[in-house]
Image 1: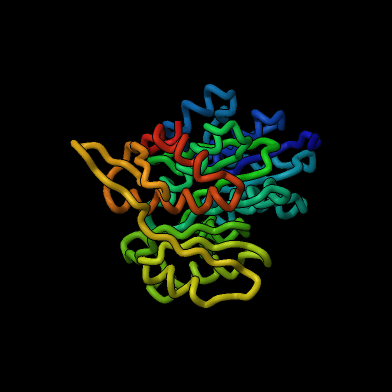
Image 2 (image 1 turned 90 degrees about the vertical axis):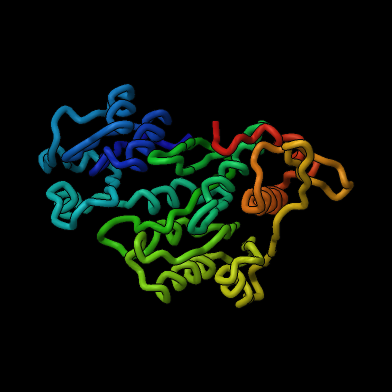
Length: 307
């Protein structure tokens, strides 16, 4: 059993930050935090967990050597007085993705990336594993919030965001996880939602592929031009698995996956894009020991989000 630690969150009201704080508290760690403004749903969840700071603002006097780990949020500035104090004291300081990597160091890390669809694919994978009663940790975005579970499970499934870990770093969050299995959905540069020019944007995904360790796997949508270019620069020590839309059919307004035995499996999501996502999840799950039969037995109940 891991020794219990004392954590402090700078910017605990963030959509990802508050979920990590609550998850660590549920593991028995001591958690505190600060922020200059906290709104719902973070506020209500922190209040329920007894983690809502008494006052808004930054309080460097609360930072001392009794704290084992400081985690700071995306919008924390380098001159934040609590961050400065933590650095002066030589405390361990992490962004959320950096800490999640440390937490999951001994786990098999499966990271789904892409400009859209990654949350659905990650949720499909976790849905199947939970239905099979296989222990799994996860971090998945859902609207303006996150779904998170941290435990001693041997596998963690991460929805790898393109967004930077913090304003202090420019690299996307997904670079920090160092995946054993990486899944690409669809990559699309949008100048309105990213600070990268197109070439630098593509380079971030290239770097993601490069962080795959020896013996790792990359699963990519063969119809996505950027993912195909990145994954066709083959490394001898990484395995590559292209996928396309899952075979499917429709009848009287209902949609079905069609397996290799020509059997129909009813599903609740329709459209070519979702049939791509079904196959991405199918391929990823095979790599962690889920049989096709198990996938088809459990995927029918997936409604689009993780419950």
